[in-house]
Image (cartoon, rainbow, N blue to C red):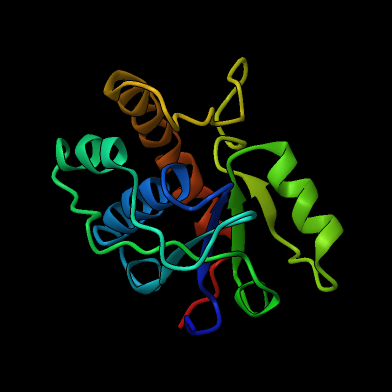
Length: 161
């Protein structure tokens, strides 16, 4: 269980988008000053099974930008993961709605990962599952595009340590 104040990234099965986004965000945060540098970033899926590996094409797409996701194992979103979270970033509106409907205690900061980009941008991240590598690379690039805006938002809500 992550320490209170973690970031949670949510998608459907936790084998493509959310682990990719979590790795990219964690990598970017590592270059920031404290307290951002130490924020734990975890991922989970609204319909995930426990322990599934990252999809092959997601692993390849991330390896091409120098990030190894081979140790990843999927996990479902739980109330435990939501409790104590600093912020939750979902891939789609349906993921956000599922959290709002399924859980008793909904985090105050519940957003889409691409929500902080200036319009006209689609705030949702399309599921690449089952597509060719190029679809995963487009997904990764859409996530990369959003990371600086997510970090800028996190700067506004992260308590000083």
